[in-house]
Structure formats: structure tokens, C-alpha cells
Image (cartoon, rainbow, N blue to C red; front, side):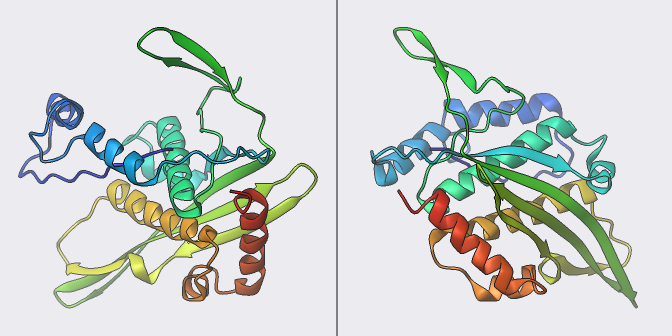
Length: 249
């Protein structure tokens, strides 16, 4: 069961690496910042973790690709490979939470489908099954738009992603989703926002909305704005994918 904790702090100055490290350590080791990761994991597991019949349908997010446009925005601000891996893990956590199903964990650069788990008494190597369904995420567009009117300007950080799901014999989903008007805001004309911060925030919001469609109830309003030219096709693909990947759970 993957778990995401979002923690926000404000500062009047940029934080150093050591200060960022201290924040991370506090979140794991104590409650100085009002929250502790292990406490939150326990609460989530206590409320929702359950043992269920194991399915032979093994979906996994196997690929996250960044277009040249996306790489040009993020390069120099993040490790591109780490950003790609993190994107897969965040989408995985959202899909598991919203669908109620299971995914083979995303292992990043580990192509052997194997990882090592350390327990109190020993450590074990766990061999994961080969995925029956491969989920591919294409981070396609990070597009900036602005319009100045007097002392104010409207800025938009538009994002687009493609989701493809390949089964053993055919492709059951190949759709693109965009987040446009929701990314816009009005600021003073002399203000400057940092694209490498704004784009990921909008993109992860899009991934969260996409994941919600796999809970068995498709939101037509979302598809109307995220995939306006392919609403019927995309809705049908989501229905088929949900049935084949998650319905058995």
C-alpha cells in the first residue's frame, strides 16, 4: 500500500540543503512539525488495510517518459530521472487509493523486478511477478501562457499527460489528458512565478484527477475539460481498464 504525505512549510528565505534535510528528519523521527510519517501510515493502515484474494492480474507502472519540452523546464532544478521515478510512484499511490486495487510496486531503475526488504530478524529478497498490464505515462506538455492587462496579468501553467495501458495481446487504453483553465491565476504584472515549481504542482493535480476515474464512477465533467475531443472513447477505455485491472479486487 503506497502512501503519500504532503507537508507544507513557509519561509521568508530559501532553505538550505541542511534545513531541508532537518525537516525531512523531523517528519520521520518526531512530532516537532505537527505530523509524523509513521503515525500517519499507522492510521491509514488501521482504517483501510485489508487482506484480499490475490489476483493474477498484475498491473504495474513500467514507464514514465518526459518530453523534450518538459525536460527543458525541469532540467537544472531537479534530477530528471528522480523526477520521472517520483511521478510514477505518486501516480501509483493515487491509483491504489482510488481504485481499491493493487499494483506491482514501481521499482524505478530496477529492471530485475526484485527488491530487498529488511525485517527485525533478517532480510529477504522478494521477486515480483512480471506485469500482465503495463501502464505507461507520457509527461507531454508543460506550456506557459500569460496575458497582461494593466497592473495585473493572467498566468497559466498548462500540463498534458498521456496514459497508455498495454495488455498481453493488445492496448486497452491510449488517451491524453490536459489541465488548462484550472492552472490559471491572476497576479501583479511585476510578479514572477517559478515554472519548475508551478508545473509539477499542476501536473500532480492532473494525475490525481485521472486516478479518480478508476474507482468505478467516471466523472463526465472532468473528461469534458481534460479530454474534450475524445470523451466517449476515453470513458470507454477507462471502463475497460478498470474492469480488467481492478474489478477483481
